[in-house]
Each structure stands twice: as C-alpha cells, then as structure tokens.
Image (cartoon, rainbow, N blue to C red; front, top):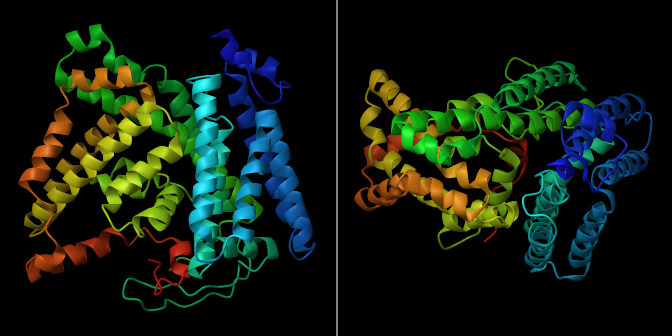
Amino acid sequence: MASNFTSCTGSTLLQPISEIINLPLDQVNFVACQLFALLMAVWFRLYLHPSKTSPFIRHVVATLLGFYLALFCFGWYSLHFLVQSGLSYSVMVFAGLEHMHKYCFIVTLGYLILCQITRVYVFDYGMYSADFTGPMMVITQKITSLAFEIHDGPTCSYNDYMAFIEGTGYQPRHQENANGKENGKYKQSEPSSKNDVISKLCTCAISLAIYLSLCKLLPVEHSIDDDFVNSTPFLHQVIYLYLAMLALRPKYYFVWTLADAINNAAGFGFNGYNIDGSPRWDLISNLRILDIEFATSFKMFLDNWNIQTALWLKRVCYERCAINPTAATFLLSAMWHGVYPGYFLTFLTGIAMTMAARAIRHNIRPYFLVSDSYKCIYDVITWAWTQVAISYTVVPFVLLAVGPSLKFYRCWYFCLHLLCLLVVLALPVRSRRRQPKEQQDILQKDSVQDNETDHNSTDNNCNQKDKAT
C-alpha cells in the first residue's frame, strides 16, 4: 500500500502533499495538472486570443503546454504519445486514400493495445487507472476519427479544432427545431463561457465531494464478500449494488466535467445558440448527468455516458459493420478500454443486455404509449430495471479480474444473463419493414422525442448524405 502512494512515473514534486492528504501521487499529479490547465486556459483565451496572435503561435503554445503536463504526470512514458502519433501520421501520408483509414486504425489501435498489454501483464497489474494509456485512448480516437473523416470527405472534428485555433468558431449559427425550421441566428460574435465554466466547476466540486464521502463507505468489492452475501437478503444486495455504483460514478463526472470546463475556459466547445439566444458550450461534453441517473433504457444510459467515445464507436464501427454491428461495437469498445478480463466480461454482458432491452422496447413498449399514465408506469419500471442492469453489467469493469467477477455472477446465479437469453428468445426484434404501419409510426415518433436532446455539433455539421460503406 505504501508503494502505491509513492510510486509514480511522473514528477515527485508533490509527494509531500500526497502523503499529507493520503492520496496516491499519480492522482495528486493529475488533479494538480488539471487545475493548472484551467488557469492556463483562461490565460490562453485572454492573452493569446486569435485577434492578438497568429494560429501558429496558438498551435505551438497548446502543444508545448500539453506535452509539459504529460511529462509531469507520466514522465518518459509520455513519449508513447509521440510514437503513436508519428506512426499514425506516417500511415496517413504514405498510404493510399482508399485504404488509409483502415491501416491507420489498425496501427493506432494496435499500438495502444500493445502498450496496455505491457502495462498490465509486464509491469503492474491493477495499476491506477489514470496511467499513460489513458491519454493514448483519447489520441486513438482523435487520430482514427481524422483518418476516417479524410477518407469520407467531411473533416468535421478537425474543422472544429481549427475553428477554435483560428477564432472562426464563434460565428452565429442557425438553430433548427424539431420540424427542421430555422429559429433564427444571433448577432453575438463571441459569447462568454464564464457561466458555463462556473456551473461545470460547481458540478465538479459536488461530484468530488460525493465520491470522496461515499466511495469508501460503499465499495463494490463488498458485494462479493461471503459474509455479506450469506447474511443479506437478495433485495438488499440489489439495493446495495445500485448505491455502490451510484457512489462510484461521480469520479467520472468530476474528471469529464473538469476537462470540459477547461476547454470551455480556453474558448473551445462553443456549439451555437439555444432557442432563447443563450450560448451552448457542449460541443465536446462527455456526459449528461441527469439523463444518466434517470435513464429509462439501457441505450439511453449509454447514449449519455462517455458521449464522445460513443460517437467515435458509432462512426468507425457501428455504421460500417455489415454483420452484427452491435456485437462488433461492444467488442471494439472492450479492446479500446484495455486488456483486463473484466472489461471483456462487461462488454460481452452489454451485448446481451442491449439485445434484450431492444426486444422489450420493440415488442412491449408500444402497449404503454396509449396514455400518459401508462407511459409513466412504464418509465418508472424501466428506470429501475435499467439501473439494476447497468450495475450488474459494470461490476466486472470495476473488479477487473476474472475470479471476483465470476464470483459476483455466481452470487447472483447469473440471473440477468439468463433473463436476457429468455427475453431474446421469446421476444425477437422484428424488422421495421415487417411491423404494422401503426406501430412503426408510434416507434418513429417516440424515437424522435427520445433523441431531441442528443444533438451534437459534429453530427450536425457533417454532411451525412454520402455515408461510407
């Protein structure tokens, strides 16, 4: 335990603080770098504004700051970031346009997986999750997205970044309502992100306080403790698991929201205007907390959790895979996350959960849409089932190893696995072409309502008419 608090591949400058507050040094370094980045983001927008300096200077400063923070957190391991980027860039330069995106995907993801294997099975199994492969996961997304966008024609995410660097991202944009009509554009040329940054920082503070207060009181590992399992009624075990996962999620809320706030403070993340004229700063937001906690379906939970990763998986895998895209997407997500066995158990379980949830939604949900009261009852029931299903699915992701994960499933008698199998066999999802017209209309109308809030500027700005095959 002592070595976990002192061992770190990055700087040891903050080791005395780590010992005082009793937190691992790599975590202290990470939080310190995030706070420093927040200050630099404000400075970057004020003193290196596009009206005051050239895009080249902004590129150089952003690159040097980023690499310095990487060195502070990860030491010489941050060189992997350069190697991965260099290899991928070489592929993009020398490979033909027709197959460049495929080669780039294989090289970038392959290098990430190689680093994950050496970290887990050669150096330190169970190392703190914010290791050097964490940034490489994001680099993998960015590089492969760019490669696929170059192959397809619309370089959306790259254009968003260039607009931020060049200061052209604040031009007023037309906003469309659900009927596809423009709500008008606004004359404001450069909106302030102050209110959104403050709001997100408050969210970070609350999330961190909740996590630090509850994470040790409600450890997920307690759900497989023999005494707990033998002496606790099953319903109470279900409630405990839900509360344990509820206490764990604020850690991710803190990290992702803080990263979003830092980008917004620098001026990156503007996404047009709302109907009332207020600016939107959710271009690169990674989660919607209320939609997660009150999700009424497995899909709704996933659509609002780790949003940028979900969009990446959709574009590079789901929309391009001709055979069972759902399974292919979950397996790619497992490989991208890492090589711990628990990750694969979680995402394999996620395939079954998704298929079962889809079958219930297509076959049962239409009968509850006949009135508001029925719809409310359905939403309450599906909310409870969604939270239980998510908690059950994610346990191996937290436990990491095969033994504890299978022990948990045995404690629960693999009940949700068996239930998913029965649902899929009893309620197969029929093709939309074969469904009655009335049911198609109901499902299509409800699908539009469910996705009203899921707008993302990258999808909105891209030309979706020419889909890649």
